[in-house]
Amino acid sequence: MADRTIVVTGSASGIGAATRARLEAGGDTVIGVDLRDAEILCDLSTEAGRQQALADVREACGGTLDGLVTSAGLGPPIDSSLILEVNWFGTEVFLTGLRDELAASDGVAKVVAVSSNSTTSSPNTPDELVDALLALDGDTAKALLEPMAEFATQLAYAGSKTAVARLVRRQAPTPEWAGSGIRLNAVAPGATMTPLLQAGLDDETFGPAIKNFPVPTGGFGTPDQIAAWIEMMMSDDADFMAGSIVFIDGGTDAMVRADDWPRTYQM
Image 1 (cartoon, rainbow, N blue to C red):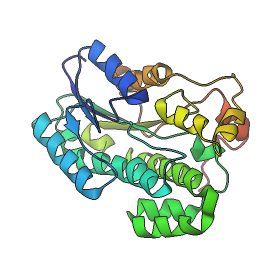
Image 2 (cartoon, rainbow, N blue to C red):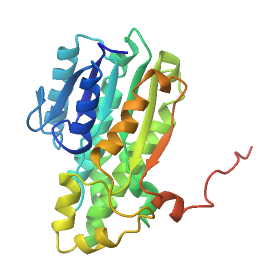
Image 3 (cartoon, one colour):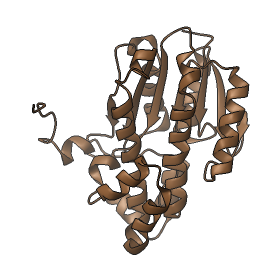
Image 4 (cartoon, rainbow, N blue to C red):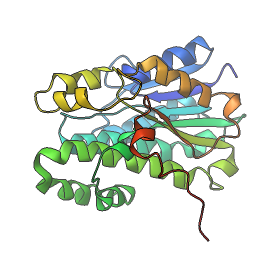
């Protein structure tokens, strides 16, 4: 499993940095993508920045990738438009744009997208918002958030992470992914003590809500706890894993929707 080349977005801090450390400790070569302290320096909040980053990654990997972890993300109290740009469009561009390079891997390529348990624990996320993101219609998505005032940032976060999860579920079992030797999965972390979470805790508006958010096991997760699962999902042990969304959230998702899953498929 060693000597793989893996791209990690958001590699300079938080979950991305912890994932990078674990992968490199296992012998992998990591191409980091971030605003700073990375091989590929870029701003994923702009279309030009995303396209340049994609081109730079393609050049750096020489046409072949063994793995991808999309960890770059923003959250409250950051502006809702920036959250959509980085969390959704900054993830989608790599998932879609690097599929051919992943399919060229000599082994079974692994991809882990970082979603969130806000996909199920954040109430009233508009379906229209998620649908607009999946249609790559950023203008409509941003317009939907404009009248939502103080809820816009949280809805942008939950909506962007829901779009990531749905993309994973829709694409993972297809011939272009599973049939091409790529295993696409996602993690859905709960509140994890990263610089992003700390910024939310420090905010007068969002801080109290974050502190009071129910976590049955108590406290917040650590980046390394999330990275440990990503590391496993990037390993040979995950060859039979495709389209899974793994909740690592101290039991919040189970508490919120104990009876909503699993449900049998109705023909």
